[in-house]
Amino acid sequence: MFGFQQTREWVYPQSIDGSFTKLRRWTFVGLHVLLFAAPWITIQGHPAILVDLPHRRLFLFGQIFTATDTLFLLLFLLFMAFTLFFFTAVFGRVWCGYACPQTVFLESWIRPLELWIEGDRSQRKRRDAGGWTFDRVWRKAAKWSSFLAVSFLLAMAMMSIFAGARPLWTGQASTASYTFVAILTAVWYLDFTWFREQFCNYLCPYARFQSALTDDESLLISYDLDRGEPRGRGKAAAEAGNCISCSKCVVVCPQGIDIRDGFQLECIQCARCVDACQSVMEPLGHETLVRYSSVAVDEGRPLRRLRPRTVVYGGLLTALASAATVLLLARVPFEATVNRAPGSSFVVDADGWVRNTYLLKITNKDAETSSATYAVTLDGLDGAEVLSDPVLLASTETRTVPLIIRVPAEDAAAGRSLPFDVRVASEQGEIFVPATFLTDARVGGASGGSR
Image 1 (cartoon, one colour):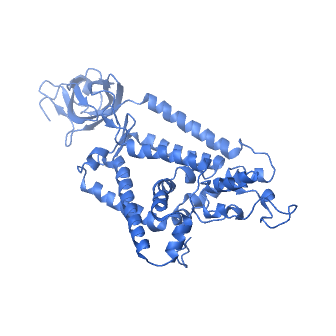
Image 2 (cartoon, helix red, strand yellow; image 1 turned 135 degrees about the vertical axis):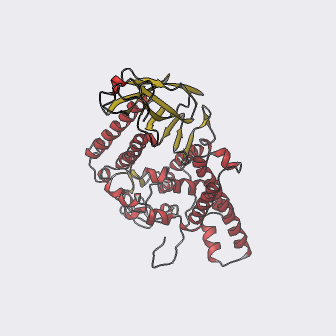
């Protein structure tokens, strides 16, 4: 580990296999498929996942969200936050051990490469302690070169979510995109070659506040003191516990801690120590001493799944999911805005009608149809005449067109500002945009000409 007043102490986790290790591998495979494949998959001609920052659009599995859909972003962020709170309260740091990118990439890429190039724990420690020989130099060079290649690959995959997979991988993306690829490559390379578990111990905020999200019923990895102590092979059978002090649970830990010392902030609940202890205890005819448990279970108290914090978190998650579902079902897949033409108020035409000119902006957010036609009518301005042709837009297309509205002089004399709604309708639904029609209350046919 690393202290700010000390030198770097390297952690050499030993390779291990077991049921939880296999479960994590399958989880990592699914997350990698999502990361690498989703930007390449197209739905209705659009990427399955694309955060288009220059155009302020989000493509998400057939749905298109724009800057006007910030409510969905708020609901999504709240849902993700309370999901983290809920699962932490129930399952502990399951995110750290099974889904955090730091853990996923280290366990999927870096540790297998180290095992392949430099060997297991004892070989790496012995070689590093023996000075710079030719054997050590070429292995380090090969390892660090492979880490650089992995860093670049992961940076490209992550940037594909923002720049688009095809443009990025074919060299057609912007200079800014490749600049961010270089930055991400450098960050991951530094992490893989040096920082590693220090990120979890010193930088990750989740490790700091997770103690406030857990309680005695939360799942954690613990050592069974009653069955394990006193530990050691040499004690009398009547006195000895099941722990034989093999320290295998220690040497496999990627954080470099001893789980037998009790709960520690550095533990990411990866369950490598569970698989290690199980591999030793099973041949001896004992159950594993390191297992998923909780403080309540260890103290002999009944485990409560329903408790205030889980009920509150679960209720909030249900409410957020319900609200997002209702809003999504009622969502109209296009947006429209109406603004007065710059520098204009009203004009009295030669026939006495009062004319206002607006700019109508329509964006087609429907990914399921190649094009849509939008008709414009008015609501709340009786007798008005609308001069605007139907607007035909392709998917994701945005167009601004002039919207001219004329009102008879006798109707315009009702007030200086007449509120109304612009109704924009298509086969997918309709939107009512509020606007005001400006005039002069003295207009009533007496004053003609133009103004």
